[in-house]
Length: 168
Image (cartoon, rainbow, N blue to C red; front, side, top):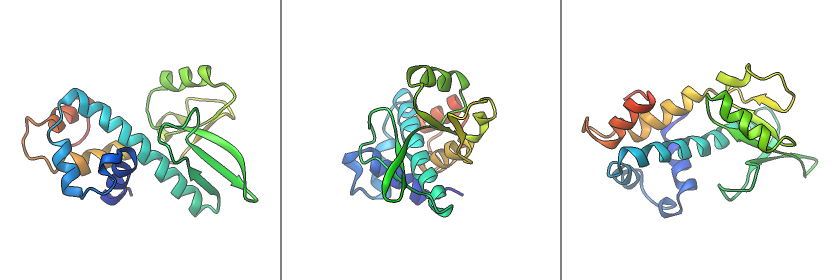
């Protein structure tokens, strides 16, 4: 289960201005943004959270992996190590959109992709791997952590939840 702390850690990693912010300061910020911006922020946070969760999952399996320091690292998101050296770099996609993954594969055919469980079965390729993490779980964690705290039903988070189907 993804915890609130992990969601706030993803926000702090993805936004330098929140690196030392309290949870309350982060919630205050997100309660003031418009719905269109909130959707982009939610997607960004979900992607960072997915990277963190996948590297943590690999660690429990004895696999050494590391997220690149920059959240906008070119082409790939994580490195897998073998005997202390980078064995492979992978791109992670936290989505339930097969077409989004297909366009990414077309753009970077030499890169391996790790995708959320909902769409992994849609691919018959060694270049696309199931993360074992559900997109719905990531969306729920971001929604419950950043949106449930907002009590105004007309807030951007409530509108965002309604637009993208996040539980509020």
